[in-house]
Length: 364
Image 1 (cartoon, rainbow, N blue to C red):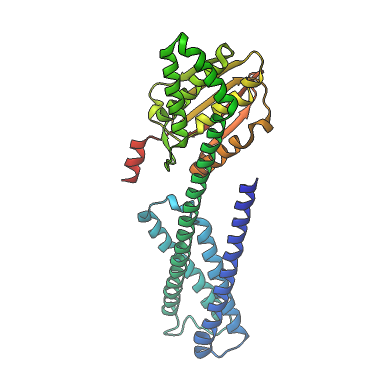
Image 2 (tube, rainbow, N blue to C red; image 1 turned 45 degrees about the horizontal axis):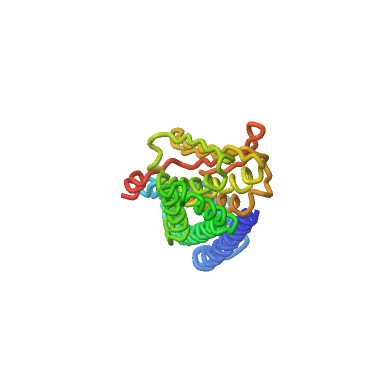
């Protein structure tokens, strides 16, 4: 809600600034045009003022329509080789609209005679050309400002994503350093040393890997799913020692999706939530299922556990994951919680299917 409110406030502020600049810009230009062009060539009067008002109003309307048609964010996906010719054509159309408004008004008021030599199409052509140059300058300034804004917004989103990633790692580390978790692991390892020393050594290795992955300072916003699953498996092996027969795990991971890119700690955080807020609270334990598959150009991750859905228990971890997905994928990602079938809680993540190789090809 806070993120939505911030985005709404930002959009409202940008629109207010846009209309302020539009009115001040065209109003100031209209005043200069009236004093520098209309007054010297045509005696100043109400008729000339009306023509000037029509001219500037046409410019304001035309540039606003161009902004709506080629607004950055929609037009940012259009290559410049296609965008620039469209903008030039738009500038000429707005110039023609302004010429019609100005020269047409002057002609209707009897100030400009279309039939008089030197006042016909030549004047219209000059008006169109000068107006198109003005609109072209407007477009250059507008797109430059928007480019700076988008770059700053992208930098801010990157910083927010890094902060959220660190927060997710901190939450995971707190969970793994929880005394109850550690004491259970250590007690299980203590009893396992005499019974199965080899397995005890493996569990110590898994614990070290898990803590190392949480403490590792990594600024990557995306990692391979295969790398993420290494951490998930280490965590589940330790929890299996703690829960023993109370935890039953089923993995259904489609072959070939290991190279897909996912946000770090995303799957890990959902698995931890499933154990902490679901299976751990059930006296007889329960089942945990991990389903990961590719569906065309999407990667879908389902983390299911037996239990009852309690939205308040989802807590900071789910909110953190949702905000990270928004910063990384905008509207192209989704995280939902549901209780289906009855007696099961399902966390579903859907993100674009990307690989490191595909991203490298796009950047080149």
